[in-house]
Length: 342
Image (cartoon, rainbow, N blue to C red; front, side):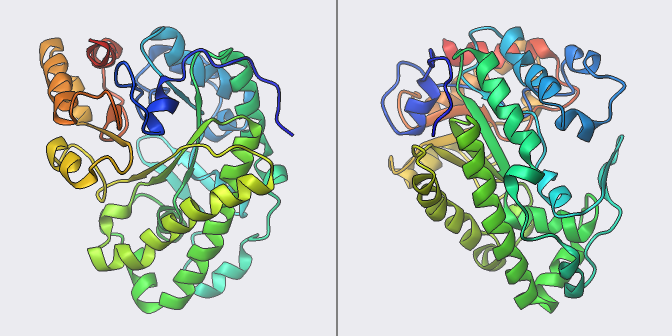
């Protein structure tokens, strides 16, 4: 049964995601709700990161902050959360350390450690706070823009669970796929099933479009990407619609962000257009560092990007090639949004 939400007043991004012709390219930004915004630091400033993620009221307020600040300039909201809520739900203890990032107190060291994970979790119970946050945020958006849900991709989740923190070399993860190949694939399969159910329940809760973040895909060679990342992304794309149908939910668009193996600022839009040939909608791909420049540069480079994608009237969602940098001036991001409207 579907929940009752206010009617959507801006469906531009959803139409573009489905490959329909649109009047202008829709735009949003990864990490548009976050540390670069002064108002983010004022809300729940005495509360740690993951506690914020577990508070539907705080999550809703943070998610809507950029929608309010850039009123009418952003075409989607993305729920404030983190990809590591899945490892937490599996029983892993994680702390978010300032200037260092996530740190696992009990990372996986050998395949025997997989037995300690709660792989048969009830998503609605263990991650119900995310689902409640989505429902509340969807209601509070009042139909201004559609709402993204998201999850981490199996490979990226596995790297965090094995490395225990951010890594430059990914030695532990690569040891696993080369030394414990079968166990790695079993873990990836389990994570895939969990991601599918988590995304499906997000749609039930009110998400209108979803994104899968494979932030560490670029650490794999082409051969290893085909063995340890791509098949599981493919399973999500194939099985999520089936699960939604079982739940009586409509099919929603899905964006796959595989950093280092997808369309970021290191790839020319013209080449992407030539390869894609209208088979799917592309999202990207301005270098986030350009937002550290002057307004004229931001505006011109954004316009160049849109033209490189063929003008943006079809098969394009404007975005950065990665998340907004924490040192970004909010007015610079506004210039990016405004350029997408011109």
